[in-house]
Image (tube, rainbow, N blue to C red; front, side, top):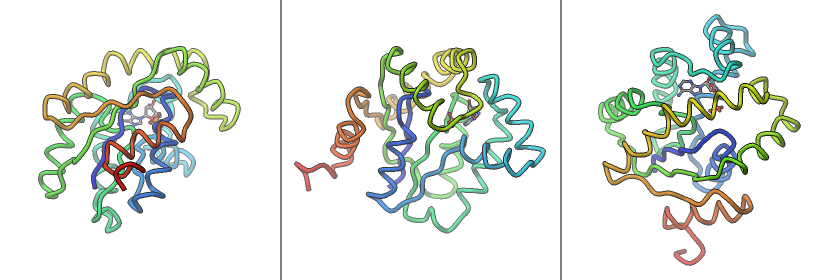
Length: 192
Ligand code: AMP
């Protein structure tokens, strides 16, 4: 199963992706995590990306596309994957469609974790304490939310127009949201 997880920063989609990985046994591909890993290793690409991420800006499409294509070339994605943090704008959505068509692995489901802004700020404050991410400062978060509204929110419409989008209510406990996602995938308690 090939799943695209969409949602604003702090929507909890990373946490949900981790739970889905355990349930489905397919890899979690997070472009943000790939970039943070590159920055930690001190690669030129990673350090350039970090300068943008720390301001809440998107990294250029071609940088991410190259990284993602390499990751999708690994054998472990043969049975599917959970994509988290990509696509982030319409150009990325279009290039993903083209790339996955070429690999004969089209997206099966796009799931939007839908959440109110006040929940987001609370969750990000919690994550900032727990993980110490350098892009979880207040000013950066504000910018990330702006970038999300302007550039990433239209990606949900892109998948809706193709009949691939389902929205999940993003408030409630991690487990409640997870159960909602499983039922979309026909894997919920009621359907198993
Ligand atoms: P995330 O972990 O998904 O919240 O991503 C953290 C940061 O990495 C973002 O704020 C961007 O600066 C960068 N990033 C991650 N994915 C992408 C992407 N698909 N396109 C551009 N920038 C990205």
